[in-house]
Length: 98
Image 1 (cartoon, rainbow, N blue to C red):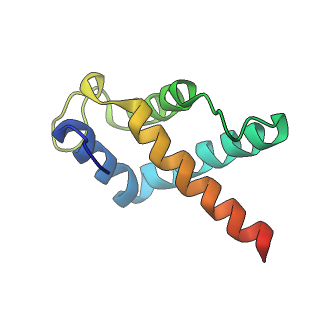
Image 2 (image 1 turned 45 degrees about the vertical axis):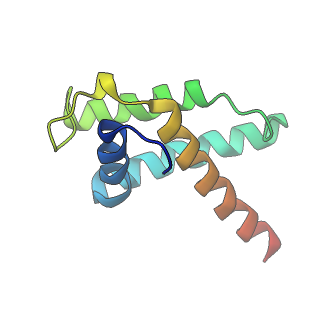
Image 3 (image 1 turned 180 degrees about the vertical axis):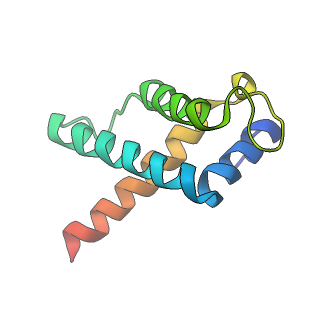
């Protein structure tokens, strides 16, 4: 989480630490990563598209603001998508190498 603006940083923390949204985003990202792997686009994922999916799930649960009161429209969803993509891809790599 380098160079994140405060709004994006707080939202990122909520996505990783609040159980309901974590489970939802984990499922969405896992499905996205599987699709990217199947298409052979692991080195060039569309993080803007994934960010839109993650934002949609957060808005469905929280409305227009995260639990700290930050507007979700001010969040850098591409940055959050990158975090989720990298973590999920790493988990997939660990499973494959086992």
